[in-house]
Structures are given as C-alpha cells and as structure tokens.
Amino acid sequence: MQPQEGLFHSPGAFSGVAVLRLSRSVALPQLREVVSSIHEELSTTQGLNLVLGLEPALLPEVPVRPALLPREGPTARFPSSQSHVLVHVSTGNRELLLESLRRVLALSKGVLSLEEELLGGRIGEGRDAFGFRDGLLRPTREHVRHAAIVPSGPLAGASWLLYLRFQQDLERFGRLQPRAQANVVGRTRDGELVVDAPAEAHILRARASGAGENHLLIRRGFPFRQGGEEGLAFVAAAADPDSYARSLDSLLGTGGQTPDALLRYATAVGGGLYLAPPRGWFHTVSLQEALS
Image (cartoon, rainbow, N blue to C red; front, side):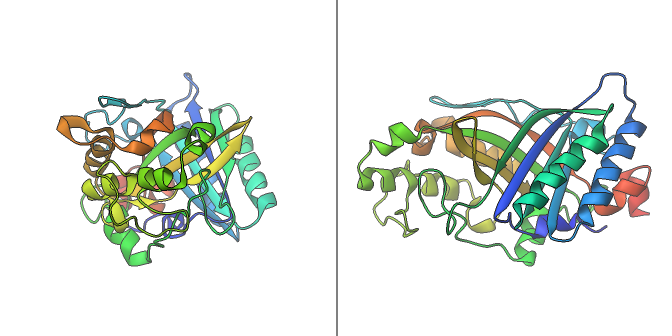
C-alpha cells in the first residue's frame, strides 16, 4: 500500500499544523468522509504537501498500545493534548498555505472543530528561533521509506506521527554566552559540531536515543511565531512508535540518563501521537480492505 506522498517532502518555506477534535455526536463513517475529502482535495493541489494523521484509537486495525504521552523526567515533562485529527501542510507559497488551512476548516464543518493551529516555516537559510542552523540533513526518499513507513502487516504503508508544541524562551537563552549556547545545542550557530560538547548537549542526547541522522524517525517540524509566542512545532514520522518512547526518554533523562540541556529553554506545552494511513485507506472501509 502506498504511503501518503507528503511524507517524502520536507517542510517548505511555509508550513502549518491544524489539530482538530471530533464532535461528540459524529459517527466514524462521517469522520472518514470528511478526512477523505480533505485528503483528496489537498493531496492533489499542485505545490502543496499534505500529511494527515488520525488518533490511533479511531482505527480498529491498530492494536491498543500504552500511551506515549504524557511523559515525565526528573526536570522536564512532555504533556499530552491528544486530539483526533492532525493536518500538516507545507508549501513554498504563503497564500497557498493559508488557503489550504481555510479549506481544512471548510470541509470539516459540523464534524471536526479546530483545537489548535500553528503557522510558521523556514527562517532564512534554515534556522530555528534561537538562531541556529536547522534541518542540515535532508532525508532522501529511501531514508523516509526505511525510517518512517511501516513495511508490512495490517498497517503497511502507514506512518506514526508525533506532534509536540514547544515554547522557546528566547530571552533566557539569549543571556547565555555564544559558547554556552553552542554547548546546549551541541553545534555552533552555523551548524558545526562542538567537538567537546557536554553529554547534556541536545545533539548528543538525540544521538543517544538512536534517532539522529534520520535513522529511526524523520523530522518534519518548523519554527513558528504566534500571538507573541515563539517556538517549534515538532512533527516527526516513524515506522515504529516505540522509537518515540526511546527518544523522549533519552531527552528527558529517565532511568538515570542525562537530561537534554535544551529542555531548560524549550518547554513542551502539548502534543499527541497520530497514525497517517496509506493513501488507499481514504477510499476503503478499513486498512485491511486497503491491503486486499
């Protein structure tokens, strides 16, 4: 079964996330009709990349799993604001981004209500809100297929999406000297690795989890500014949701590990785990039928 094509495209100059909640009186077939309409229209819009995920509990084919969020460490916490539908759109055209989000809401009327929306995108040559080069490793289609796409079984062609919203404390981080900032991140502002970075450096904690260099997950997030708040809309795709548990525990410093220094300056305020079904799911009764 073919994965959603948007998974193979890195976020463009402009990106957005919409988190939507299902109305209580709506049945699953109505939800399927709405999300299929969103997928059909936006996935065929030229110049727009779409990834659409659903809460795993909505899909009967998905086995029940322990909750990924909330998750706590000795000094930080990843909370849960789990909802029902996650829509991630990206493009090189700001007007197209805005129009796509308008269409999501228009097609959702009466079935889904908007719970959260973030707009952002690439800063300059690709920097985060702290001013550090980001997205230095561009995943190939092969990287995405290996790390982010379920290879076989009833979920073949699907991808597990992790969404986290981080608020970044620019003022506090900005009070650090440049060398101290680099030690927190593990890289200089221009992306050079800090050779003698401390074990708590963000890059080292990410690598300790096995999630670095597009090995176990593909990062699809983007920086945003909204209502005076700046932060990171972290979106990732993985073939195995257990890789998220290992990654988050490594960052939090659970089980005696070293906590990620970056979490002193970036606070997670919400997030959830979603499943992006393969393309065929949107026009069939079930994932099992999509495979037959």
